[in-house]
Every structure is written in C-alpha cells, then in structure tokens.
Image (tube, rainbow, N blue to C red; front, side, top):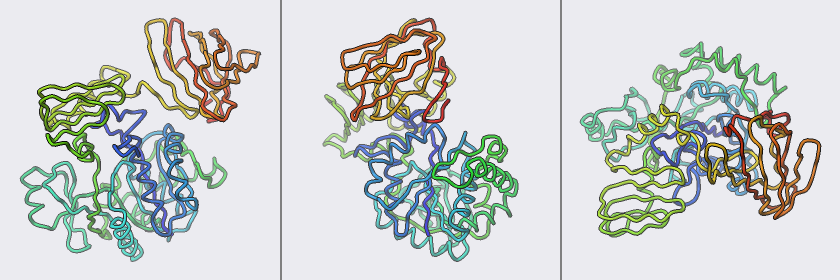
Length: 472
C-alpha cells in the first residue's frame, strides 16, 4: 500500500504579491489555471495502488485545501483525501513524524509513505511514476529514499546530494556558483528535491534512533490527538499543547543526514520548486521579443519582460528584463535578475504591519469569499459571496453596524430574535451588538453588498456563538 503524504505549509514569500500568508504558494494558480496543490494531489492520486492521499497542513488552510481538491477529485473516485491539521508550523520533522504515526496505526508499519511538498511542479507524470516505483522497491528493502533531481544548470538555490549509484554519500548545503559548476561537471551530484519514500515503521525507527526527542514528543502528540478524536477520522486536528513541545527541525537535519540507511533515486521528470517569478515566467511561451504576458497588456519597445495582471490593462514602454505583477491592492515591479529578493519586500511589509503581506483584497472563508471594495476610517464596503448551503457563524460585533443588500440569490438571515428571508434587491440592517447569522438556502451563489460603519472596523471585532466550521 502506498500513501502519498502532501506537506502544505510553505509561505512562498518570493512569489508575492500573489502568494501571501492567507493564500500561500500551494494555492497559486499557474498559467494553465490549476493551482500547485491541485496538481500535487492529482499527481499523487494517479499513482498505482493509491487509495488515500493524506494532507498535513495548517488548520487555517483546511477548507481552502478541500475546495482546491474538489475539481480534481472527481477524476479519482476511488481515492479518499484525509487531513492532519497543525495548529502552527513545527517544520518537516514534526509533520512527517505525526504522519508516520497516523499511517502506521491506520494501515500498519509496512505501509509505504510518499512525502511530497504541495508546491512543486512535475511535468512528466510517467517518468515520475517510474521513479516512485523504483523508490518503493528500495524503501521496502529497508531504506529511507530521497529523490534527487538530475541538475541542468549550476543552481545555487538548492541543496545537493553527492551520490554513488543509489547510495547517498552526503548532503550538501546550497553552494557557491563556482562550487555548483563543479558539481554539475562531476556528474556525481543531484539537486535535493525534498521528496521522500519509506515505510511508516522504518521512519519511526530511524526517528527513535536519530531524533529521540522528536519521536517521543510526536508520539505523545499523536496519542493526545487520537484520544481527543476518539480514534482515527478523515480529518484530525493535532493537539496544540503536545504539538508545541515537539522540537522544531527539518527531516533532513533530524534524520536523513544522520542515517546510514539512505538511498537516492535520480529523477528527470520536469521538476521545479517554482521558487521565484522567473520559474513562473518559464511556464509561459514567449513572443518574438521574449515577452510573456498573462492578462491584458500593450507593449511598446519592450523585451524579455513578464507581465501578469488580474483585471487591469498594463501598458509598458521602453522596458527590458522586468517582472510586473499587478493585483488589485499591490503592484510588484522588479528586475528579473533580482527575483529572489522579493522576499525582502515581504519582510519590510511585515515590519510595517501592512495588511497586504497577509491578505488579498479577496479573502477566502469556509463559507465563500469576501472582497473589500472600498474602505475609509469609519466605513468599509464588501462584496460577499456565500456558497450554496453554506452559513456564516452566529456572531456579534461590538463596534460596527452592517447594512446588507442582496444582489443575487436569497439570504436566510437571523437578526437578533428575528429570522427572515431577504431576496434580490432587498436589504436589512444589523445594529452593533445584535447577534446575527447569514445562510444561503439556495442552489446558486448568494451575492451581497455589505456596508460597515462604526468606530472600529477590524476583522477581529467578532464574537462567535456558534459555527458549523468549528471556529466558535
């Protein structure tokens, strides 16, 4: 039995302004319209012998992940998606330890795990499947197997693996350009992809030997998590207190670099970690001047430039070798040679406590989305879209009142002690201090305009009394 385990937690700060804390890199749509996490799920589900895909991610991304999986799940009716939800990040060793404990208990210690980051791109499924088959055979022989990518350039942004056949001689940190060139010419080094294959039992054994503190605290956390859930269920929230006690470390440092039972499978299957805007750019066919455009643009004397715009026309004149990424609330303009430095912008935004490092203008919620259309000191206007059958929490605000106008669909609204149906072109008023709830009883999206007014309009001015998504 093969259980793919998708690790979904990377922030992707080098891909701002599309990738943000509330909408990280795995959820980015690529030029073909699919997100990285959708592609990862489909890639895993398509492998022979797979009947379950386990995703380990933050609690905040659970509903977003389910929504992303829904369009591709229909192609794999015999594959179930299960989740382990972290309260916060503790690096890959903790995630993989908890995943191994869950897989071992649910399927036995001999079950194979295939660990895949959610934010990588692999273009050749057949070659990838062949590499997984090879790795599975090595894992069943008692090895921790890592996938090494055959290098195509002297890349300084990846770690390397020195190899001797399938044997791993050593792991190497990100090298200088000169050293990377030597690695490329030697033919003995592979890029470290961060993908692994092993049996659940053997990973746990190696954790006990090489990272006993991580193993012991992970076991305590799994026990508390399982007991709280009263067994194994498709969605399990990891116990916060015991999870926080697990030492924070990567699986590479904690186990892979210490074990003498590590094998490597070389891979040439069109792998990319999509680590910068240049990697996104490479996915779009260029025009005669080397320009690549997603959206609408008018170009005059422009060359070797990538432009991506969600909903505005971009006009460019006399430019060369630039990245222009336009979103409703933030614009990135950068020299392509400095694409790795986008993360420095995010660092500065965090220091400024600017909202656009974390949130997009349109924000996903379990029930749908809201889009901030306009805001000022004492008012905010939102467009709210509620999915069919979905419901907002029963809630109350201390500092703001709300006017709701239905523009499409029908809303079932609880306003203090009254329950009413509000139809298209009708409205209602929610005073501050009133308990209220919104439900979409229809079969199509409910679209509303919300006008907030008050002395404080922050998203944290909310008291939840009941919530179908467990947020109360």
